[in-house]
Length: 47
Image (cartoon, rainbow, N blue to C red; front, side):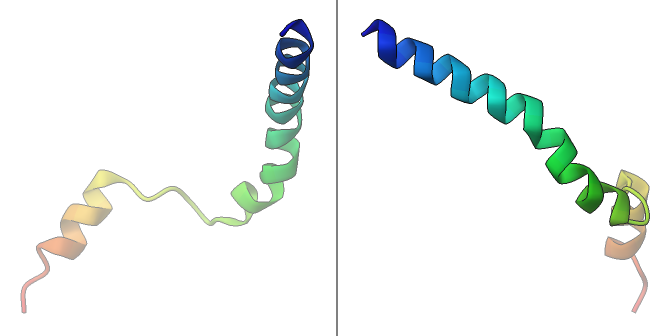
């Protein structure tokens, strides 16, 4: 049982540690975050 807990902890910390550097290029490629005001403007567009 202890081996499973150790492996789970190592994998979870590895995922947390490496997730941001792996995802950083994809995050920085986006021009900007979409705000709630942007959604309201699109949804209430006349016509």
